[in-house]
Length: 122
Image 1: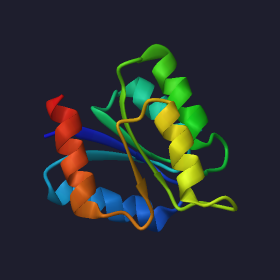
Image 2: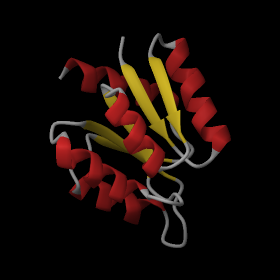
Image 3: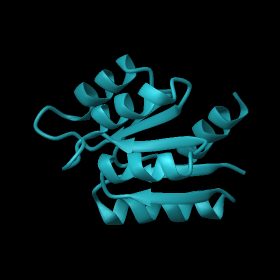
């Protein structure tokens, strides 16, 4: 199975995703923001990164661009609950950054698992 880095400032969502992924047999590393995620990724690269877009410290788009600087083939899935503009605006921006898939919150966990399987197989 894959090593997945889950990045979200909402601890409940991060834990829910981690539990879902671990039950599917994946190994999960968690980060509450992009700055910590970048450090953790450099210490031990993940097969797939799942990142929220709106976070403190280093938000998702900056995280994606930062990680892709050194790892252009990095497989990323973006998630967002929105904000003032709604999730579609932020997820569209993530798509322009080349993420594999996007998911609005609440996340369809089965669709997320399928997306991870596709990313790992690619």
